[in-house]
Amino acid sequence: MSGGEFDIRTWLVGASYLVAATLFLLGLQRMASPATARSGIRWAGLGMLVATFATFLLPGLHNLPLIVTALVLGTVVAWVSGKKVAITDMPQMVALYNGMGGGSAAAIGAVELLRYSSLVHAVPGGVPVAGPGVVVLSLAVLGSAIGAVSLSGSIIAWAKLDGRLDKRLVFPGQQAFNLLVALAMVVLGAWAAISLQPAVIIGFFVLALLLGVLMTLPIGGADMPVVISLYNAFTGLAVSFEGYVLGNEALIIAGMMVGAAGILLTRLMAKAMNRPISGVLFGSFGGGGQAQEISGSQKPIEAGDVAAMMAYAERVVIVPGYGLAVAQAQHKIWELAQRLIERGVKVKFAIHPVAGRMPGHMNVLLAEAGVPYDLIADMDDINPEFPNTDVSLVIGANDVVNPVARTDPASPIYGMPILDVVESKNTIVIKRGKGTGFAGIENALFYADNTRMLYGDGAEMANALVSELKALDGGH
Image 1 (spheres, rainbow, N blue to C red):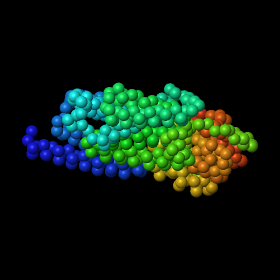
Image 2 (image 1 turned 180 degrees about the vertical axis):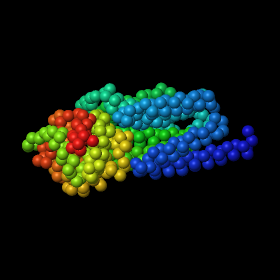
Image 3 (image 1 turned 180 degrees about the horizontal axis):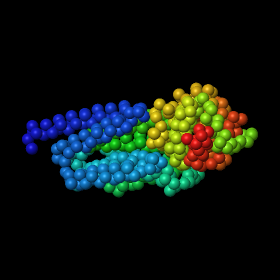
Image 4 (image 1 turned 30 degrees about the vertical axis):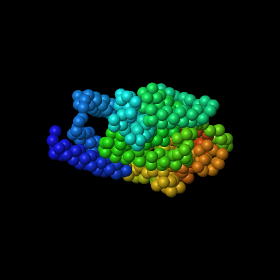
């Protein structure tokens, strides 16, 4: 291969990576709005396609049949699973994809560390002719650790979201034990970078995988949005570090974008749950709190009365929560909203940042049902409107609408930003029973004078409300 040809190919690779990075940025920017998120995903996907094909231009690329086979298999599996996955199972898929990204980064680190090991120990005296530098070794170990933690932690998160692990595993001294495992992983990682002994490298990976499991086992389902965004950040950082190890600019740029976005999202989600980042990283968060005694009683109501209240209201706000996803009631709720809109009622959907089991869970469900983006409001925008709202319909949300978060300093959710549904003129809560929310405390909203409880399955009650509205409209 001539020097000129080599220069041209190298230039083409660099130019392609620059184009890919630009497409990544455009895609990320368009993902900031629900109205342009789909096109943002396409732009980012195109960027990854450009980066992938550019990699084939790299000089000295080996194992082409194996690489092509892996690409084809990965593409087919992703396409089929993406087409088949139910919208209610999207959190599980996101968790798995996070884990796959982290696992890929960890695999790169493992291969590179073992390759460096073979270079060192193949030479008498253990000194390689041209070994890696300290920075490369450090980033290989760091990326491997973060990627392995993300892999095993995401698998546990998937199992919890999928109902395969229903219980939180908590034991005395858990945080201290996790800290010991983390410290042991750091020590083995440093030893692996210095000695490059295969046995030490393997032990380091075992501890990293174990740490991911231990970090995620005590976490409950309601905290999964924070967990998923955290592991998303981990995966991005791991990919970026391993990109430096490989000297691949596209991996560095893409990983840093994902990592930065994930860190920002984790901060926002933790703030929305009133948790410090240190609590997310090291705390056994998601635990149950002491139930609070609240005077009064929950007051039931029938679907016909609720339909009449909403039909003759001027403003209605619908507040979805995880129960909406469980009941798969998003289509019926949108049908209900459409009927109200046809009657001249002003309808909005209020979304809490951590409602559901992944970041943007409620937004995804409502978008799948066809709810226009301009009818969806976030917490900061909708809270000032609740005092002027005639009826707020809460379906499947609990802790994120509990007013004790503002009024009771002893409450485990005190200080958590909430949707101010309690300020509404009338509140209707669709709920299966009288149980507490994830935090294990009573919801003062359910006992308020202006709150009525519509007991039953979310989808069934939404269907009943639609039927009652039809009856009010003369059966049309």
